[in-house]
Length: 362
Image 1 (tube, rainbow, N blue to C red):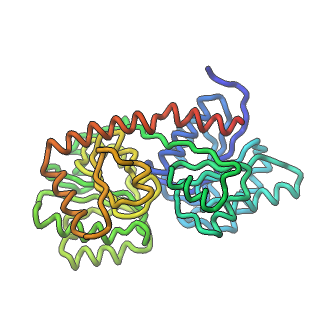
Image 2: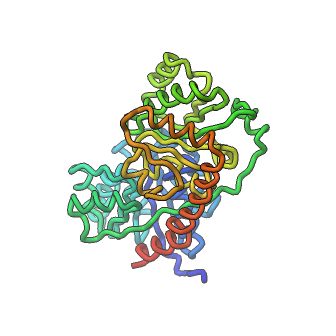
Image 3: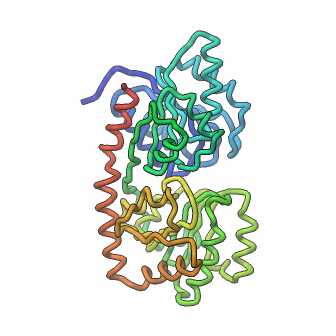
């Protein structure tokens, strides 16, 4: 039943692509709008296309920064938007928003306007400084068991709520031949996908070494890497040195990414990324995954048979298990079925949205 209370929720976030954090924000905002609430989203960066997708589901969107990097100077702009919109609840999505939302709240109190501040955290790597920023919130939402444990260590449990993320398949579909021609892939080869920012924590260097090892056994595989960051040129040079540059397709942003999931044979993740990059989307589409065993990837895959968690050492294990999944059709089918079951049982959209709305309305 639609709730016509028209409570205003404001969400402060960075701009993201259509998977991972971007997908979770899109699903959350669509759910809030469907529940009858007014939703305003303030984007602290640009470049991921999130504004267009949120406007399509009924949200008001304000972009306060035309750059991809967050700048603290936008705090005054955010505070002004909050004064104008008069939300009852402001949600900071991601640790990187905490200092801006916390500072905007201080400015709002000076003007006499008060609102409830909820901080959502999707990454487990809370430092002491990050924890201090997050602790300013009235309530904290975490979307992973590893994040919950990190908050326990930082003693942030007095107002914490666990809300599981949602894994939902995309409806978009483009014919494989057409998709291949649009982004320069070979439709006759198998495709792997990795979505991650090109920063140290993502450890894409491991992935490139793995591509090199996989090429020894398979010459019919192309790799799609979606993400931007300061390491792009260094990674491309390493791919050239290891003679695998022709098999890798780099995209900083890929608007047709949702259509890829029906054509990808394997998802790979070599480092620490929120929600494992696109692991949740992979689960919902039944795509097997090979990932380095990190707290974030374990949050998504657990001990299920939906994919293979690989230790950091030996480095050859990553490529070996990825090749095994590509070559063993029976194993890949078994992983695909387990992935879809886990998506429905552990990351059900209705359950996730219900818990989120319960926290917001409390």
